[in-house]
Length: 337
Image 1 (cartoon, helix red, strand yellow):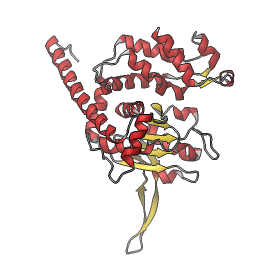
Image 2 (spheres, rainbow, N blue to C red):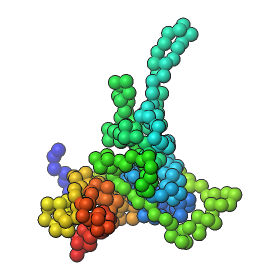
Image 3 (cartoon, one colour):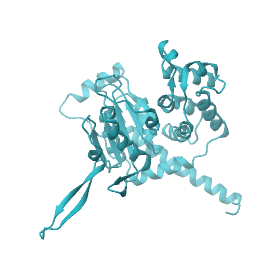
Image 4 (cartoon, rainbow, N blue to C red):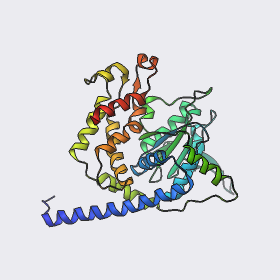
């Protein structure tokens, strides 16, 4: 590549700014449509959309009945993606997700195998109550999330593009659940916590969802446009200050890196994937909030959803009643000062 002259560089920058501005408008339209059917929960909607815009998967954690499933269905419609849903149960088999071979017989009695694709062949896959399935079935899904293809009877089949998994998990320790192993939680770009709605939002839910007609959300994007925006997000420049903030935050969450509080409370900290996730998500958050460049505020706001499932507390910290969220909040506070 030769050196670009100043005029070309200027044009290039103008093109990127123009592309970013049209992406801003699209994302604002997506927000507006989702807001018609999901009341309140701005943070949940924001973080889930940021995960998708960043090209990743998200784990939504909350008690039943908080509209997690409704949010995923709504997103599928608004983003114009081909969506499937799997309800995870203890007896679910890997083939129930990936698909299986069936035997066909033609009129001459000749038999042949045909692969019938499972629900994983979707652009947006909702994996409901993922912690209810056995580890073997969980790993079938998690492997496809990582590799974007499945292998059946020795044959490799690519998953559709884009491919996003939005999984839900019930945080209550119940009989018959299998918590996801730490290494597999790392596959999720973000863990999004879903809390009970605020009073005003819950009032709206009561009034607007118990009548005869419910508001519907329209389609704003399609898969091709979503992938263009995802590509654009990867091209957004990130300032040195933001890169440094990401590195120092992620490293401060690891024991043995000179942070006294972390050494005392954290058993193991986030790996390099956490920094990669922050780099992508900070750009997506900037666009989501109507800005063309990520800021330190984006990094601090995303610390919890990006880091919380990638670190664990020591026994002593848990005995004191601390949570991973408390530790992250402390690290963010230190970073802000």
